[in-house]
Image 1 (spheres, helix red, strand yellow):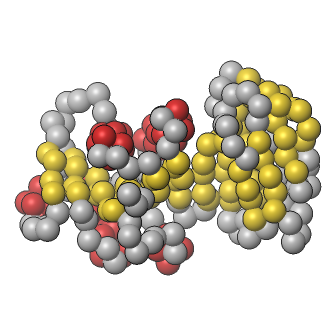
Image 2: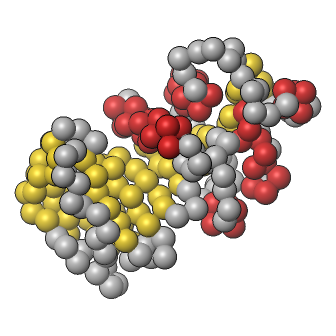
Image 3: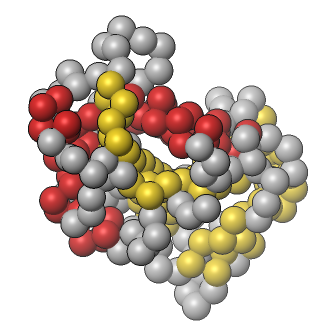
Length: 211
């Protein structure tokens, strides 16, 4: 099964950059007002979900080839959370989240937590916005190319132990990062190298920042 691309309603400015992440066999799942990105991304939805509080339901229903799941407005899951859970039920294990970080901090943090959910289910997930690419580092080593200007490592568990960073301006060896002291901000990949980030215990949010 291919990758599921989940498109939310947060703002996107650099569509050219975002389009560079798309692949020919992607499955496109649009969430409510995420549909306003459809034309600029140049893709058609395979599935649409939402309570349609921010996008006209009639316009969504006009997408004749797309399956549509209408949700109640009063619910525990946001449209994006429901979308990811639905895609997991359908067997997807690889996810790209777009339009998922931006104007509203509460929705942004909720969508970052989706990366934790996917990681706990053994799925791969990255969240991309105009400025950065985010992923969870837990049981595997993550790589950062020198195409990124900076990268940051933030603990998403009480304590991340055994943090190791190689090929970076500020290397770490068996370090500990806590939620109270996030000192792994704005590291840099050594020129011509690929940084390697791993953690023995806990989970890190790896944020790769573009120039």
